[in-house]
Structure formats: C-alpha cells, structure tokens
Amino acid sequence: MITTSVHDMTFEGLTEWLAERGHKKSRATLVWEWLYRERTTDFVAMEGVHPECVKALAEHFHIESMSEHSRQESKDGTVKFLFRLKDGNLIETVLMRHKFGLSVCVTTQVGCNIGCSFCASGLLRKSRDLSSGEIVEQVMKAQRFLDGRGLGEAVSHLVVMGIGEPFDNYDNLVKFLDVIKHQKGLAIAGRHITVSTSGLADKIYTFTDDDLKVNLAISLHAPNDELRTRIMKINKAIPIEKLFKAMDYYLEKTRRRVTLEYILLKDVNDQREHALELAELIGERRSLVNVNLIPYNPVDEHSQYQRTERHVVSEFFDVLKKQGVSVSVRLEHGTDIDAACGQLRSKQIKKEAVAN
Ligand code: SF4
Image (cartoon, rainbow, N blue to C red; front, side, top):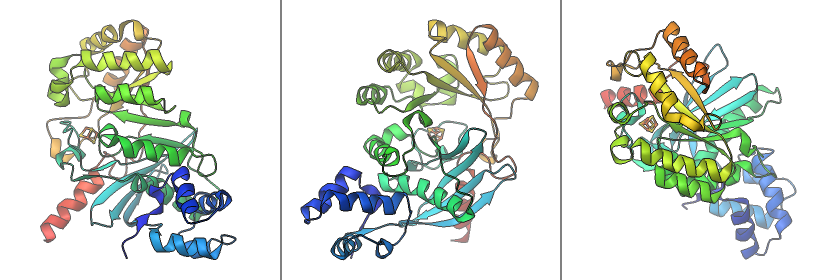
C-alpha cells in the first residue's frame, strides 16, 4: 500500500485526521510527542497511544522516506549528509556547530532552476520540489544523528539555504515551518530560523503578509544590475530596484532586519568600488540590514571564479564598516570536506552517471 510521510502533516492536520477516525485531540498530542520529542521511527513503539490509533497511522503513513547515502564529518564539527529519497534522487543537508548552538541547513528542491553562475547546485536543473515532510525529515535525521551521540544536544537554529529556491516551493516551505516551530514538537524558535531567497520579489510580499515570524535573507551578490545579472541571471527578470521595493515592504511591515548575502568572487565583485556602490545602494536602510560576506568556495564546475584573498575580504569589510553598514563575514564550516553547497551531491551524481 502507498503511504504518505507523517512528516507531511501539520499538528492541526494530524489532529483533524485522527478526529475524522474518532480519536480525540490528546491522542494527536501524544503521537506528535512520540514523533518529535522521542523521535521514534516506528508507530508500534508509540507506547500509550491507543492500538486502534497506531493501526490507523501505520496503515496510512510512514515515518521515514529517505535513507542516508553517505556522510562527511569535518574536524570543526560540521556534518554533511547526502540522503537518498524514495524516488532515487539525492539531496544534501548540513549540520553546523556554532558558538550559539547547532544549526541545520536544509534543501527545498531537487536541483534548482535559478541558475546562479557560481553554484554547483544550479547546474542540475530542478527535477521536483521537496514535500514539506521531506524538508522536515532532514532536520529529524540531523537530530537523530545527534541523539545517537547521547550528549543531549539539540538542533537550535535552521537556515533554509540549501539546494533550491525556497520561495519557488512556497506552500511546502510554510508547512515545514509550521511543523518545525510547533511548541509540542521540536519547538525551534522563529527568531532562530532564516529563509534565504535569490530574490523572488512577488513571494517576498506574500512572505511578509503571511507574517511567519522568521528571518529573511536575500542573496544580493552584486551592487548593480549589470554585474548581478552576470552572476545571477534571475536579475534580468527581477532587477535590484524591484527586489529592493519588495524588501522595503518587508522591512516596513515586519520591523525585522534583513540579511543581504554577498558572495565574494575574486576580481568580479570584491573591489573597493563595489563596496562603496553597495553602501550607496543600501542607503538609508543601513540600520535595517546586515551584509553577510561569504568567501567563495571554488568548485571544479565554475573555474571562472576564484576565492577572494583574505586581505581583500578585510578591505571590503572595512569599507562597508566605515560607510556605516552593519557587516559580518560568514564563518567557514567544513573546509576539510566538500564545503561548497551542492558539491557532495553533484559529485555523487557524476559518479553514478559514469557508472551507468
Ligand atoms: S545559489 Fe541557491 S538559488 Fe542560486 S542556483 Fe544555487 S541553489 Fe539555486
């Protein structure tokens, strides 16, 4: 029998589903706790849940819909997982250790259609969206990995910055956030969750109006349209002016700060004049945005791009700082493993293509 992933269900959805079968709300709470607090992978293990309820659940749902294909662990505590989905597709998830806690970076699509010119993931076009349950399960797998170590550690932060454009899979993103934030389950605080978009302006308006109470990051990567279109072809359809108009709407309505992601590509967008132009572009929004500089991790597929030297990163940082712009440099994670986003997955896909 074909079953659905139970992680595709929101708490309200599960409660309703059980109520339709004559089970009361308290049973949904218990099932939810078994799933997200005890993190069981077997309905039969749900002690205290009425046997009729367990039977119904087991008939309609499954708990695991992906398996771990491989895993890379870095000396700095970063763990990169490659998961095989039920349909054979591969996705990547990263667990990172920070001073402030443990974060997971999730993937939202199989491949990506945005086609940023520096990205290993963008080379492999999107073949499908992930279901909300498949996004939830990535967090569960990372959490179970931590559980297995027996140190009582818990995922405290989430970044939706893995493969895919989350706003191109918007409904499932919203469902995923609902599950992951639920107080009776993993209860990850909205202020610890960041969703990153390449700049789908229309969806920024929707995201604002939906008031999901999570943070927003926008991949900017260039201070003007000419350069941004070269780096990110999406800029042709959604130029900076349109993007910033949507961002201003978000800033005004939510009063939350926005992170502007800026990947530094050697001699492409990392010069002093680019930093000055960026400060000018940000203009009066200085107190409302933070620029996050990301030193580029070179990948074989994009030999046109090199890594910006450390002193150039510092100069870029200093120029922005002097201009009164709030700026940070993203700490690197997993430099001794396949650190670039999508690198592990694309390597495996190539390997499988050769083998076939
Ligand atoms: S950087 Fe993100 S949005 Fe751009 S191609 Fe890669 S996965 Fe897609």
